[in-house]
Image 1 (cartoon, rainbow, N blue to C red):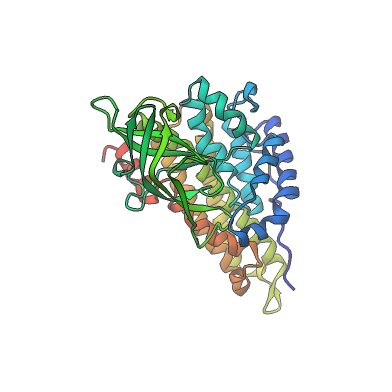
Image 2 (cartoon, rainbow, N blue to C red):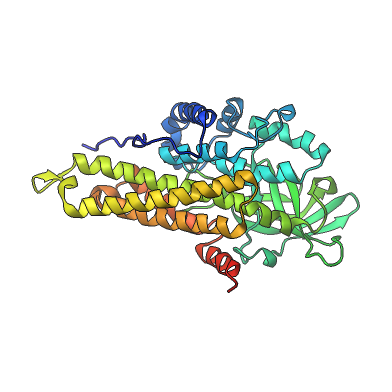
Length: 393
């Protein structure tokens, strides 16, 4: 018989990062996940997409747009620790394909920091309610992590831009109503690269979505190719000034990387909890697996490593909230957490033996889901490049 794996983390003292408001928010969001996400997640994994109404439900419950001003239907609280709670609870339940972190942490900052009053009135209420789902489209088939190599172009034509190009690996690509598209405009001031951000709305003529890409993990996260063939985008949908896109992207990448770091270390700790529970219940050679020295040493190492990285990630979250987080520190957090996630989940899966290879066990899903952490948001190699540059190398 397959034993049920708990999704409740082992009891531990509350981290100093959080206060009572964050823990009350955690309890509320945990109830939302347990009621409206966990029971249906296996079906979403088979379907390859999360139903749109789940975002609406999250919005009604106050879990979208916490930083959006109250006048537009948001929480009016700019505190990334609430985002951290959401990322940790999503990791705890193993429902990492639920694109709420992408919507809140990666996309919303662009709408909050670079929109004018008219754009805020048009988009923020829907983003807070879940009526509008957001995505960001940077990666191109031949570009990867190289933002300077973006080939998508936007040519000014009267009150519009004519957008041409393609994007790939775009999370929320099918569900998205508003896509933040990185493109090179032809009307940027002299001396700027021309890279700019345009909001492409769902029904824009010339905007087409390709197939839902078949990934090794995170199956419920719709990940699509996007195509723009003379797509006519109103100039009123430009974020900021022409040519300001590179600065905006680099600024917001630090928060995106912190989301990946938070989720990575939380996933590693959940894998550890599953392994500890399993080795106590599973017998081999007449005694529990937990009695063997190798089991104790493996789990002790994972426990130590996760606690050390958790402390660093928490420090970086504090810096992000205070507005002092640097690009190299964010890169260190993502590098350390995502690399440990892959290593920790692998070592924990090994203790399950053959059962760890069975998809009925959440550790198996966590194993394949973990692999993307070292790729998206900037690969581990790019993180090392950023860090080494900060060292004067």
